[in-house]
Image 1 (cartoon, protein in one colour):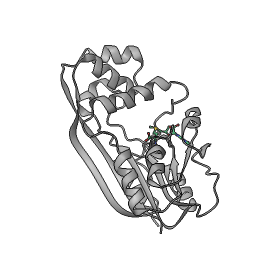
Image 2: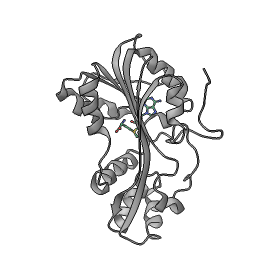
Image 3: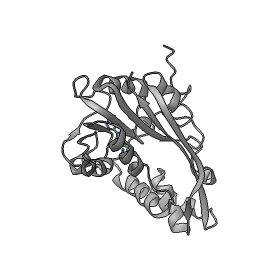
Length: 239
Ligand SMILES: C[S@@+](CC[C@H](N)C(=O)[O-])C[C@H]1O[C@@H](n2cnc3c(N)ncnc32)[C@H](O)[C@@H]1O
């Protein structure tokens, strides 16, 4: 097996969910208000419910967005996250580190890792542990952004274009080191319209700028501003 890592010089995206909860709240608010396509959780929940077997592990599942959709569809779901807000997720919810999964081999019929593997320095290690807790033939689904996401805002985003540990450019190859990749869905389309500078500020705050940087950064842009979203959703199967 050729072990393909993320690109040389790539780094994990910083974790700020306990330190700066308003940043992630801004990200969620900007997505729900200004993105015409919404997030991936609805389609992912529907496909898991129709093609996978429970229980599902939602890795880095936050406060339970995916679990809240899966449980009514009959998919028992365990949420694992290291941030304190996992306590708000539907039970069972576990506060733990994705690097060391506290489950025995073959515990799950499916594992989801939505918008989270980019926080890990070595996603391949986590992928191997995910394979351990999945049953043979079980489903794995992950999504991530492109390093070239939101190009219209590049001038305000200091890290724009830099590779990160699990980005859309390398993620399918990384997943294929451990799983059989079934489908890679990519998007590269104008999906966000920011009507005014306040909206641009909220969006930049969600992308990791401080409140002051986001406010000042927003002043550089003419509105309404259309923003191109680039990312990928990967469906795979345990060998
Ligand atoms: C962008 S949020 C995504 C949350 C959720 N999956 C969603 O789609 O809404 C990333 C989540 O990964 C969690 N996370 C990051 N590193 C982690 C780790 N090493 N172990 C467990 N959770 C982690 C964070 O606490 C955060 O809740």
